[in-house]
Amino acid sequence: MDTEILPLSEVAKSEIKNFLRSHGQQDPMIEWKYFDFRFNGNHERGYVAVRDGRVCGFLGMIPFDLGYESSTFKAAWTCDWYVDNPASNGVLGLRILKRAITSNAHLMHMGGNNISQGILARVAQQTVPDAGIVFHLNLRLGNLFKRAGRRFGLKPLHWGPIEQIPLGRLPQGSAEDSVMTESGIPDAIMPILEAAGLGKCYPKYDLDYIDWQIGRCPNLSSFTCYVSGASTPQSAAIFWRPADSTDFWRMVLFTGGEDKSEIASLLATGIRQVYDQKGMAIRTLVSRLDTELIGILEANGFFQHRRLPFHVLSNETADAPLDAMSGLSYLDGDHAYIFE
View 1 (spheres, rainbow, N blue to C red):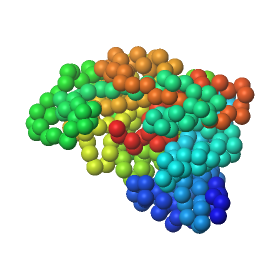
View 2 (cartoon, helix red, strand yellow; view 1 turned 180 degrees about the horizontal axis):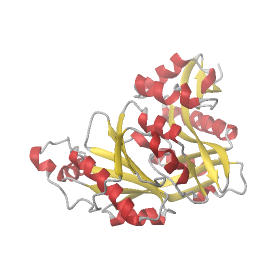
View 3 (spheres, rainbow, N blue to C red; view 1 turned 90 degrees about the horizontal axis):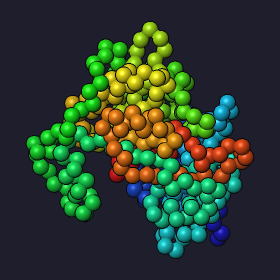
View 4 (cartoon, rainbow, N blue to C red; view 1 turned 90 degrees about the vertical axis):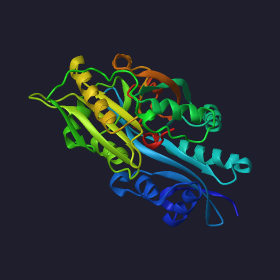
Protein backbone atom coordinates (compact mmCIF):
# COMPACT_ATOMS: atom_id res chain seq x y z
CA MET A 1 0.00 0.00 0.00
CA ASP A 2 1.25 3.52 -0.81
CA THR A 3 2.34 5.82 1.99
CA GLU A 4 0.03 8.81 2.58
CA ILE A 5 1.15 12.17 3.97
CA LEU A 6 -1.73 13.51 6.06
CA PRO A 7 -2.29 16.51 8.34
CA LEU A 8 -1.91 15.58 12.00
CA SER A 9 -5.57 16.47 12.59
CA GLU A 10 -6.65 13.63 10.25
CA VAL A 11 -4.72 10.88 12.04
CA ALA A 12 -5.87 9.00 15.14
CA LYS A 13 -4.39 10.44 18.31
CA SER A 14 -3.53 6.95 19.61
CA GLU A 15 -1.43 6.22 16.51
CA ILE A 16 0.45 9.50 16.81
CA LYS A 17 1.17 8.89 20.48
CA ASN A 18 2.39 5.34 19.81
CA PHE A 19 4.78 6.62 17.15
CA LEU A 20 6.15 9.48 19.25
CA ARG A 21 6.59 7.16 22.24
CA SER A 22 8.71 4.89 20.03
CA HIS A 23 10.98 7.89 19.42
CA GLY A 24 11.49 8.62 23.10
CA GLN A 25 8.71 11.09 23.86
CA GLN A 26 6.57 10.78 27.00
CA ASP A 27 2.79 11.06 27.22
CA PRO A 28 2.60 14.30 29.26
CA MET A 29 4.86 16.08 26.76
CA ILE A 30 2.97 14.69 23.75
CA GLU A 31 -0.38 15.81 25.22
CA TRP A 32 0.97 19.29 25.99
CA LYS A 33 2.82 19.79 22.73
CA TYR A 34 0.28 18.56 20.19
CA PHE A 35 -3.10 18.19 21.89
CA ASP A 36 -3.48 21.37 23.96
CA PHE A 37 -6.54 22.66 22.12
CA ARG A 38 -6.48 25.95 24.00
CA PHE A 39 -3.19 26.71 22.25
CA ASN A 40 -3.83 24.90 18.97
CA GLY A 41 -6.98 26.75 17.97
CA ASN A 42 -7.51 26.13 14.26
CA HIS A 43 -3.80 25.67 13.50
CA GLU A 44 -2.53 22.47 11.93
CA ARG A 45 0.14 21.00 14.20
CA GLY A 46 2.07 18.75 11.83
CA TYR A 47 2.13 16.21 9.01
CA VAL A 48 2.16 12.45 9.38
CA ALA A 49 3.21 9.60 7.07
CA VAL A 50 0.83 6.63 7.28
CA ARG A 51 1.42 3.20 5.70
CA ASP A 52 -1.03 0.29 6.15
CA GLY A 53 -2.85 2.24 8.85
CA ARG A 54 0.32 2.76 10.88
CA VAL A 55 2.29 5.97 11.42
CA CYS A 56 5.82 5.68 10.01
CA GLY A 57 6.92 9.32 9.81
CA PHE A 58 6.20 12.66 11.48
CA LEU A 59 6.97 16.37 11.32
CA GLY A 60 5.63 18.65 14.03
CA MET A 61 4.84 22.36 13.67
CA ILE A 62 4.50 25.12 16.28
CA PRO A 63 2.31 28.03 15.10
CA PHE A 64 3.20 31.63 15.88
CA ASP A 65 2.64 35.16 14.62
CA LEU A 66 5.34 36.71 12.45
CA GLY A 67 5.64 40.48 12.76
CA TYR A 68 6.81 42.44 9.75
CA GLU A 69 6.71 46.23 10.08
CA SER A 70 3.05 46.99 10.85
CA SER A 71 1.71 43.66 9.54
CA THR A 72 1.27 40.24 11.12
CA PHE A 73 1.46 36.91 9.28
CA LYS A 74 0.68 33.36 10.35
CA ALA A 75 3.83 31.24 10.53
CA ALA A 76 5.15 27.99 12.03
CA TRP A 77 8.37 26.50 13.36
CA THR A 78 9.16 22.88 12.48
CA CYS A 79 10.13 20.31 15.13
CA ASP A 80 10.13 16.56 15.89
CA TRP A 81 11.13 15.31 12.44
CA TYR A 82 11.11 11.49 12.61
CA VAL A 83 10.87 8.51 10.30
CA ASP A 84 11.12 4.82 11.12
CA ASN A 85 14.35 3.26 9.86
CA PRO A 86 15.85 6.57 8.67
CA ALA A 87 18.74 4.85 6.84
CA SER A 88 16.28 3.37 4.35
CA ASN A 89 13.47 5.94 4.68
CA GLY A 90 15.30 9.22 4.13
CA VAL A 91 13.18 10.01 1.09
CA LEU A 92 10.04 9.68 3.20
CA GLY A 93 11.31 12.30 5.61
CA LEU A 94 11.87 14.65 2.69
CA ARG A 95 8.34 13.98 1.38
CA ILE A 96 6.84 14.96 4.73
CA LEU A 97 8.92 18.13 4.85
CA LYS A 98 7.94 19.12 1.29
CA ARG A 99 4.27 18.59 2.10
CA ALA A 100 4.60 20.93 5.06
CA ILE A 101 6.45 23.51 2.93
CA THR A 102 3.79 23.55 0.22
CA SER A 103 0.99 23.85 2.82
CA ASN A 104 2.42 26.75 4.86
CA ALA A 105 3.04 30.30 3.72
CA HIS A 106 5.75 30.91 6.32
CA LEU A 107 7.57 27.84 7.58
CA MET A 108 10.95 28.03 9.28
CA HIS A 109 13.45 26.12 11.39
CA MET A 110 16.38 26.99 13.62
CA GLY A 111 19.20 24.72 14.77
CA GLY A 112 19.08 20.93 14.42
CA ASN A 113 21.61 18.12 14.14
CA ASN A 114 24.13 17.71 11.34
CA ILE A 115 21.91 15.37 9.31
CA SER A 116 18.85 17.62 9.40
CA GLN A 117 21.00 20.68 8.68
CA GLY A 118 22.30 19.12 5.48
CA ILE A 119 18.77 18.42 4.24
CA LEU A 120 17.28 21.72 5.33
CA ALA A 121 20.04 23.75 3.66
CA ARG A 122 19.22 22.06 0.33
CA VAL A 123 15.46 22.68 0.43
CA ALA A 124 15.31 26.06 2.18
CA GLN A 125 14.57 29.25 0.28
CA GLN A 126 17.03 31.05 2.54
CA THR A 127 19.62 29.90 5.08
CA VAL A 128 21.57 32.08 7.50
CA PRO A 129 24.33 29.94 9.09
CA ASP A 130 24.92 32.20 12.10
CA ALA A 131 21.52 33.85 12.67
CA GLY A 132 21.15 32.90 16.33
CA ILE A 133 23.82 33.41 19.00
CA VAL A 134 23.80 31.29 22.17
CA PHE A 135 25.14 33.17 25.20
CA HIS A 136 26.33 31.36 28.31
CA LEU A 137 26.90 32.45 31.91
CA ASN A 138 28.86 30.15 34.23
CA LEU A 139 27.80 30.37 37.88
CA ARG A 140 29.52 27.42 39.57
CA LEU A 141 32.54 25.18 39.08
CA GLY A 142 30.32 22.10 38.70
CA ASN A 143 29.19 23.35 35.30
CA LEU A 144 32.75 23.16 33.95
CA PHE A 145 33.09 19.57 35.21
CA LYS A 146 29.83 18.54 33.53
CA ARG A 147 30.65 20.26 30.25
CA ALA A 148 34.06 18.57 30.15
CA GLY A 149 32.45 15.21 30.85
CA ARG A 150 30.01 15.59 27.96
CA ARG A 151 32.74 16.77 25.62
CA PHE A 152 34.97 13.76 26.28
CA GLY A 153 32.19 11.20 26.67
CA LEU A 154 32.85 10.55 30.36
CA LYS A 155 30.31 9.19 32.81
CA PRO A 156 28.79 11.86 35.07
CA LEU A 157 30.92 12.46 38.14
CA HIS A 158 29.71 14.07 41.35
CA TRP A 159 32.25 16.26 43.09
CA GLY A 160 30.14 17.14 46.12
CA PRO A 161 30.75 20.57 47.65
CA ILE A 162 33.40 21.37 45.04
CA GLU A 163 30.64 21.65 42.40
CA GLN A 164 29.08 24.53 44.35
CA ILE A 165 32.15 26.77 44.27
CA PRO A 166 31.10 30.06 42.59
CA LEU A 167 32.80 31.24 39.42
CA GLY A 168 33.46 34.96 39.47
CA ARG A 169 31.16 37.66 40.73
CA LEU A 170 27.45 37.83 40.08
CA PRO A 171 26.17 40.85 38.08
CA GLN A 172 26.18 43.90 40.31
CA GLY A 173 22.96 45.69 39.37
CA SER A 174 21.69 47.93 42.16
CA ALA A 175 19.06 46.55 44.49
CA GLU A 176 15.74 47.94 43.32
CA ASP A 177 12.48 47.48 45.19
CA SER A 178 10.72 47.97 41.85
CA VAL A 179 11.97 44.60 40.51
CA MET A 180 9.18 42.08 41.09
CA THR A 181 9.49 38.30 40.90
CA GLU A 182 6.64 35.85 40.35
CA SER A 183 6.59 32.14 39.69
CA GLY A 184 5.50 31.05 36.23
CA ILE A 185 4.37 33.53 33.56
CA PRO A 186 2.40 36.39 35.17
CA ASP A 187 -0.24 38.47 33.38
CA ALA A 188 1.68 41.58 34.44
CA ILE A 189 4.18 41.16 31.59
CA MET A 190 1.54 41.44 28.86
CA PRO A 191 2.16 45.18 28.23
CA ILE A 192 5.91 44.51 28.21
CA LEU A 193 5.50 42.02 25.37
CA GLU A 194 3.43 44.52 23.44
CA ALA A 195 5.97 47.32 23.97
CA ALA A 196 9.16 45.34 23.37
CA GLY A 197 11.01 46.76 20.35
CA LEU A 198 12.04 43.81 18.21
CA GLY A 199 12.89 45.41 14.89
CA LYS A 200 11.45 45.16 11.39
CA CYS A 201 10.85 41.39 11.12
CA TYR A 202 10.52 39.19 14.22
CA PRO A 203 8.59 36.42 16.01
CA LYS A 204 5.64 38.14 17.65
CA TYR A 205 4.93 36.21 20.84
CA ASP A 206 2.02 37.10 23.09
CA LEU A 207 1.25 35.98 26.63
CA ASP A 208 -0.77 32.96 25.45
CA TYR A 209 2.16 31.64 23.42
CA ILE A 210 4.70 32.08 26.23
CA ASP A 211 2.35 30.64 28.84
CA TRP A 212 1.92 27.54 26.66
CA GLN A 213 5.61 27.26 25.74
CA ILE A 214 7.00 27.78 29.27
CA GLY A 215 4.24 28.04 31.87
CA ARG A 216 2.24 24.94 30.90
CA CYS A 217 5.09 22.73 29.71
CA PRO A 218 5.10 19.72 32.11
CA ASN A 219 8.89 19.41 31.99
CA LEU A 220 9.70 22.99 33.01
CA SER A 221 9.69 25.16 36.12
CA SER A 222 9.96 28.94 35.74
CA PHE A 223 9.88 32.37 37.33
CA THR A 224 9.65 35.88 35.88
CA CYS A 225 11.28 39.15 36.93
CA TYR A 226 9.88 42.47 35.76
CA VAL A 227 10.17 46.11 36.68
CA SER A 228 7.11 47.54 38.38
CA GLY A 229 6.45 51.24 38.83
CA ALA A 230 4.14 54.15 38.24
CA SER A 231 4.53 53.93 34.47
CA THR A 232 4.00 50.82 32.35
CA PRO A 233 7.00 48.50 32.84
CA GLN A 234 9.01 47.84 29.70
CA SER A 235 11.51 45.17 30.74
CA ALA A 236 11.11 41.58 31.87
CA ALA A 237 13.19 38.40 32.07
CA ILE A 238 11.84 34.85 32.19
CA PHE A 239 14.06 32.14 33.70
CA TRP A 240 13.30 28.42 33.48
CA ARG A 241 14.83 25.00 34.11
CA PRO A 242 13.94 21.30 33.88
CA ALA A 243 11.32 20.47 36.50
CA ASP A 244 13.56 17.77 38.00
CA SER A 245 16.84 19.72 38.20
CA THR A 246 18.08 23.15 39.26
CA ASP A 247 21.48 22.85 37.52
CA PHE A 248 20.95 24.40 34.08
CA TRP A 249 18.69 27.32 33.20
CA ARG A 250 17.40 29.19 30.16
CA MET A 251 16.45 32.85 29.95
CA VAL A 252 14.68 35.24 27.62
CA LEU A 253 14.96 39.01 28.09
CA PHE A 254 12.42 41.56 26.84
CA THR A 255 13.65 45.15 26.76
CA GLY A 256 11.44 47.91 25.45
CA GLY A 257 12.96 50.82 27.34
CA GLU A 258 16.26 52.70 27.33
CA ASP A 259 17.05 52.57 31.06
CA LYS A 260 20.20 50.43 31.25
CA SER A 261 20.34 50.54 35.06
CA GLU A 262 16.79 49.18 35.19
CA ILE A 263 17.76 46.27 32.92
CA ALA A 264 20.92 45.61 34.95
CA SER A 265 18.87 45.45 38.16
CA LEU A 266 16.40 43.10 36.48
CA LEU A 267 19.15 40.73 35.35
CA ALA A 268 20.97 40.88 38.68
CA THR A 269 17.77 39.94 40.52
CA GLY A 270 17.02 36.98 38.25
CA ILE A 271 20.59 35.67 38.15
CA ARG A 272 20.83 35.91 41.93
CA GLN A 273 17.65 33.82 42.29
CA VAL A 274 19.04 31.18 39.93
CA TYR A 275 22.26 31.14 41.96
CA ASP A 276 20.35 30.86 45.25
CA GLN A 277 18.55 27.80 43.82
CA LYS A 278 22.01 26.22 43.24
CA GLY A 279 21.95 26.90 39.51
CA MET A 280 25.23 26.17 37.71
CA ALA A 281 24.76 28.01 34.43
CA ILE A 282 22.33 30.10 32.38
CA ARG A 283 21.99 30.22 28.61
CA THR A 284 20.05 32.57 26.39
CA LEU A 285 19.63 32.82 22.63
CA VAL A 286 19.45 36.07 20.65
CA SER A 287 19.49 37.18 17.03
CA ARG A 288 22.77 38.42 15.61
CA LEU A 289 20.82 41.57 14.68
CA ASP A 290 20.00 42.41 18.31
CA THR A 291 23.23 44.28 18.93
CA GLU A 292 21.92 46.29 21.89
CA LEU A 293 20.77 43.13 23.65
CA ILE A 294 24.12 41.48 22.88
CA GLY A 295 25.87 44.42 24.54
CA ILE A 296 23.68 44.09 27.64
CA LEU A 297 24.43 40.38 27.97
CA GLU A 298 28.17 40.84 27.55
CA ALA A 299 28.18 43.66 30.09
CA ASN A 300 26.58 41.25 32.57
CA GLY A 301 29.08 38.41 32.20
CA PHE A 302 27.55 36.33 29.41
CA PHE A 303 29.87 35.10 26.65
CA GLN A 304 29.17 33.78 23.15
CA HIS A 305 29.01 29.98 23.20
CA ARG A 306 27.96 29.02 19.65
CA ARG A 307 25.80 30.06 16.71
CA LEU A 308 22.72 28.43 15.25
CA PRO A 309 21.56 28.40 11.61
CA PHE A 310 18.16 29.71 10.59
CA HIS A 311 16.24 28.29 7.62
CA VAL A 312 13.32 29.90 5.81
CA LEU A 313 11.60 26.90 4.24
CA SER A 314 8.66 28.75 2.69
CA ASN A 315 7.90 32.44 2.32
CA GLU A 316 4.97 33.74 0.32
CA THR A 317 5.52 37.33 1.43
CA ALA A 318 7.86 38.65 -1.22
CA ASP A 319 8.57 41.92 0.62
CA ALA A 320 9.51 40.24 3.93
CA PRO A 321 13.28 39.49 4.03
CA LEU A 322 13.05 36.72 6.61
CA ASP A 323 16.79 36.14 6.51
CA ALA A 324 17.05 39.31 8.60
CA MET A 325 14.96 38.32 11.65
CA SER A 326 15.50 39.98 14.98
CA GLY A 327 13.99 38.80 18.25
CA LEU A 328 15.17 35.17 17.98
CA SER A 329 15.20 33.36 21.35
CA TYR A 330 14.77 30.04 23.13
CA LEU A 331 11.02 30.55 22.68
CA ASP A 332 11.46 29.64 19.00
CA GLY A 333 10.43 26.13 17.99
CA ASP A 334 11.04 23.55 20.70
CA HIS A 335 14.34 24.97 21.96
CA ALA A 336 12.76 25.93 25.31
CA TYR A 337 13.00 22.46 26.83
CA ILE A 338 16.09 21.06 25.09
CA PHE A 339 18.95 21.31 27.59
CA GLU A 340 22.06 20.08 25.78
